[in-house]
Image (cartoon, rainbow, N blue to C red; front, side, top):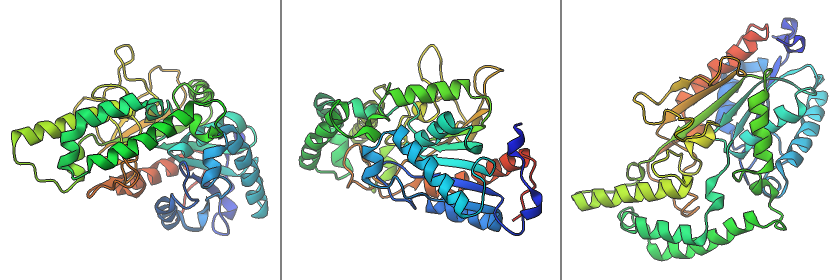
Length: 355
């Protein structure tokens, strides 16, 4: 354990003794992770310093590259800690990143671990291996509409609207592939981006920073809507919609996803015949998966069944909201496990956490 990870017990009751940096997703607001912030504050009280930066909100997270966001984030963290009379190099910090924020969290670990005392990194539904949806073409969208048309009608989504939305979506996906388009934050979460290759190297070579990669999945669209299925044909239509949606999201038939990011990408573990990820085993949800290799860095993975990336099905229509769901940021099961994991990180750094 690095010596700078040690926490001074003498100030525990007087001021915060460790910080948690909360990083929102693409095009989001600073308090997107407010449910987690409130949970952590309730649990750790004055011992914790919650940091919710505003330096990459909205369009900034779309236009700026992840490396640019990381550089600005480092400056923000340093200024904020100095303002609170903390030494940025020695004050312990845990980084929690949701979606694109998870990619940023790993980038901070990759680029600035010598300038920050990072106790651990936690990613929530982060596209660590990319967002295959960004590779889709208009032809892919039309195939999805064709294959899933009957199922879409069963969830009362008008096909006229999805055909219009598909034209907009195809333009956005094309924009993400154009070299001159200034959407660097979006390009960086596309599969095989330079940024994600850096994340791969960081996670592969990291031996200093404990990482918890959290992934969720929900492949049954029927359970998300108020739909009364009565006939065998209707069940077949929903099954076809589920298959078409999974293929559209992931590029792979039957792949699990959180309605936006494939589970394999969230877990930074390719799902194929050569390096299989046990996605079809029983008792999958709420389970730690060991990393391959005895000498691998301290990485843990955890999977939760039935939790969504968000309440809206962005891949189809940002205005298509589900009727029934639990999202990752509000899930009590995840919040409870975050508390235990954070306690372990701080205790392993030589600190007894007091509420």
